[in-house]
Length: 323
Image (cartoon, rainbow, N blue to C red; front, side, top):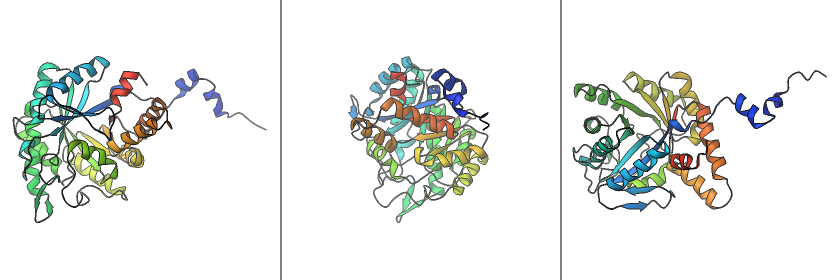
């Protein structure tokens, strides 16, 4: 019996396993999400997402300063305006909640990389990601609002704008709007393959962005489709996306892998609110070891091909030095 090949040799002990590991999770490639409100003196717990809060700008700055000392220097911001309307005016208002937050971050904590989520659902009175007419979400008229929003974030100092709306051709429109306004260095991270998913429900509670009627299946992707993700990603890259994203993450690692194989730009994935909530619930129920399960999840997403991960676990990972 010829036993020359023994894969178990490379599993003998932790040192050997570390030396032969194909993928190691990298916490410097994690991005922490934040929900920012206009009101003052706010720190409101988000019940489905333990450890995550809606915060006013003052408290946001306190959190960012504390996180920066841990090593967290990349964030993505979601705004929750005091007022909403049918044209999402708060999204592109020079004095909007996110614009003010970005300016303060760049003034007081300039070492933080700021990603501004470009979407309209939090600012629309009906909760959809585009202009609505006779019950239909209009694609092309919405592009102008998205372009104005992206430009306003860039003007405030955002390093990266991240369109998450899934309107067709919004990346090309935003790239042109940024360039015309001399923001040629502003990076576009496109939510290129964003699926209509039940995993978003805790986020919608956090951001107050649940649609007032219907659903988002006419513009977010059908989770039964995989080849369509490749099409969406390539269109966005052709239109000027510098980075692309697959969202959600855990149930879509096959999509992350497919996209990784066809693109030569940085690939992000969003470890979304429902995924985070499930982990926290299992830990609180005493059926999971949080460090082990979170480390395994992050490793699997990097292994699938992600270069960076947006995750609500980021602070826990840094605070506890899980990897």
